[in-house]
Length: 227
Image (cartoon, rainbow, N blue to C red; front, top):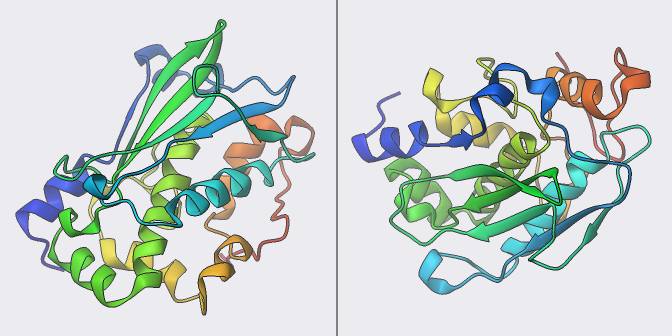
């Protein structure tokens, strides 16, 4: 598939910013689950390309990860200054799908996510499909949130195209990455009932957050993809 230069630059910059030692030893990056994990979703503006309902997509993405643990993680809204996970909407022109930056709150790991909701800046093919298909645009925003939240929970990039944690730096059919999820949707409210995860995504996540079930998979209320 031919990808124009702007699209390739945007895709390559889907990035994670973690301390080097955390990248080398992913088991050292783990959110504290001894108490509810708090999250904050910032208000968006038209300048960033934010659309009404994008904050719901972000909330669904948070809930999707929480439900993969056994027992499910407790995730609750919290104030911006102290929330463990904070999601911000990046203004247009940054050339990013999304980015995660690690930080600490009271000595514990925390994360800031920056999501770019203006699909017009993500290359011609993505922009064209998003303009003509609102569910495709919603898919792009939702999966970007899911991917970046995966980093927030301690998961690194992978080289397997089936994974939600796949890195676009490895190439591949980027439209297909989103379309495989979009094709399962008939309406927007289907999104929280469709799994964005591969079995590998879930096993790696559960090795961090469900240590008693390292060899099992769990989909909560979502359907699992077949491998």
